[in-house]
Length: 178
Image (tube, rainbow, N blue to C red):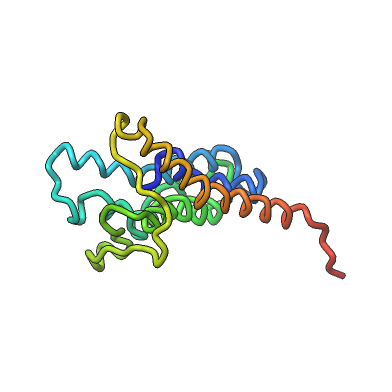
């Protein structure tokens, strides 16, 4: 999995790129949180959840169904977010779903249960270019952690910065319609 520092890259790129008129600051913060929430499933390790099952890491919390449920739940706070229901729904879904998508690009761990509850099958992206992050702070604060962060800078942060800049450019481009 990418680190907890990198999962927010996607909502930050989208939110900052689209601007605060579309993605207000409160919704942006909620999107960052939504991009991290799927990894709460690692607590199952402490309770003996069997790896590869729907309740294990990269199971149901990494599915599109979970992302949709989280987004629908977030719609109840759309007024507090100062955003439209549509913006809240789409942004929170993209934020939460991006977690599993990024995990599918890693070179380790089990695949991602994108289609849960309809299928327990786990999937990886065709290119597994992101170094998988070690679980645990002591393992992360090692040369392996530095390698993971370098991989994330190259394969996640660089493209999302470009995405944010493209969105910002398009947002600021003058309207040339008649």
